[in-house]
Each structure stands twice: as C-alpha cells, then as structure tokens.
Image (cartoon, rainbow, N blue to C red; front, top):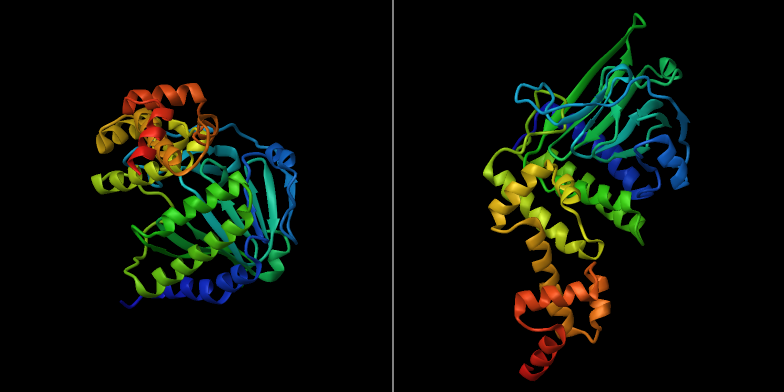
Amino acid sequence: MQTDSHNSVIAQAVERQVIPWVTHWGMQRIFTAFHSYNDWRQADLPLPEGSSITYKPLKSKRVARKAHSQDLIPGVEAVWPEDRLWSVKKPRLCFILSGEVAFQIADYTFHCKPGHGIILPAGVAFPDGSHTCFEESLLAERQREILAITPISCWISRRFVDEHGDIRRSADNSGYPRSPIAEYLSHLTEEAVRRDFNSQAVCSGLLMAIVNLLHRELRTNAVYKTGLVTDVEHVSSSDDYQSAIKRAQKYIIRHLRHSPRLSEVAQYVYMSKTTFAEQFRKETGMSFSEFLNQSRVAEAKELLSGTQLRVEGIGQLLGISPRRLRILFQEQTGLSPSDYRKQRRIQK
C-alpha cells in the first residue's frame, strides 16, 4: 500500500537518522526519565554524552484528570497547569532530530541535542505541547524537530523561526493500530526502569526492534494520518480488553519472583485497578490473586518434576514462603510438594 506524504516524511527520518543512531549507539544516548529531580539524583546514573540536567522548580501542583469521552486528548491522567506539563497512561519514546532542546520533565530540564533519545514512562510529567522547548541557541539554528513514538501513533513535531522572527510550529503524524510496537515499547520501558542485570543489552535490542518495526509500518502497512497529535486511545472494545488481559497474564508469569501486585499489572496494561480487576475476571474466569496462585503452583510443578530444588528454593523463585507454597500446592493438587515429586518420579 502506498503511504502518504506524512508517513514518507517520518519514514525518511527514521531510516536516515534514527536507525543509524540506534545501530551505532544502542542505549548509550538514551535517557530514561525519572519522576522527579531527587529521584534522578538518588539513582546516581551517568547521563548520555553531550546532555545535562538542571533543576527547575514546579510552579503548580499535580491536578488529577478524570477521563471523559469528550476529552480532546484522551488518556491524560494529570496536569500541572502553570508549568504546562501533563502525564499520560502510556509510555513514549522521543528522539531529537534537529536543534538543541530544553525538554522539561517534572521539576527538571533535560538539555539534549540531535541523536539523543528520551524514554518517558507512564505517569512522568512532560510538556503538553503548548511551549517550544527551545534552547536560546535555536534562534540561530532556525529549527527544532522531535520524533515521538507511542504505542499507537508517531509524529514529528517542529518549531521553527520564520523570516519575520516569529516562532511557528508544524507536525507530520501517523497511526498504526494493533502494531507490535505497543508491546515492545512496554517491554523497553519496563527494562529501562528496572535496570536489572544485563538490561542495557536487552534495552538496546528492544530499541532496535521498535525503530525497525516503525520503519516497516510506515513504509508498507496500512498506517493512517491521525487527526490529533496524541499518544493515547481508550481501551473500549472486547478485542482490546482480551489483548490487554493476555499481556497481563504473560507479565504475571514472567514476574512471579517479584510477587506482582494488581496495581502494578493494571498500570502495565494501562487500566485503572477497578477496570482491570473486572476485565481480568471476565476474561479468565478467576480473580487476579487466583490466577497468580494458580500460576505459582503450575510453575512449582515444573520445578519439582524437572529440578532437584528444595521447596525453600522453589518458593524463593515464586515470590512466596515455603509454608505458603505448601498450603497452595496442597489446596490445588491434593498433594504435598514432596509427595508430588515422588509421584512424578514413579510415573517416569
């Protein structure tokens, strides 16, 4: 299918700038945003080369937003009115394409240049688009461009100085419903925030997958020009809920060791706790805690059959005490873990 001019403009930027940057640098020039200046200071992590951070106190307090069907930009969860910041329920990934940028994040400013990227986890405050993010030096450069990538759409936002010295703006934007980009972006954000062992290499791989998937979507798939520069859509259809709950189930199983909480998983699939609990029961036929415990017992069966691990070690891997594991196992199988292991050995 032929892509329109908006898709072509973004595709060219991805092909000629973003993919080469990610191929060469991986995560080295990507900054993962923190919720506050103090959080960044406490993390004590090096900044990407050529970037810096300055403290910028907030003028206003966080004001929570309730979702309304008539909202111009759905999915905004909070605003900081005087600072012209907002936070949304889904992550986004930004790349600076041209110009020096002063990108405000919560109560600090990230000063960056072309080639730098920013991962914005859900809930982090960032500019609402009503101000320029210009560094003063941009007046000489004439233009600043940022590529924003979200789970369902992308756009290039421009601020430029016209021949009269006035600051103008324009944008090219496209959407890609039901793309795997959404899941990869969630995984990237999760890995970048957790900073587990070898996460830098994992993030680099996920980042490369995202930009190449985006390039493919823009070049070959049925993308469309979006009417608004937005990164959020309401989860409304049964298909959307089914997809979200399947992702939630995978997340739970993948993180058994960390004893995932309902609120944590609900945030991962961009739902309120109440909606998530209701939809989880509707789609799976069980509550969140029932599925969590069922998954623990299923994994315990595999470990009892295939390893020599003691119940204490298995409990540690599943995020619960040995006593709690024995109780759950007995309730669901009618056997103790040791009796189950003996039975499996006899059957083999």
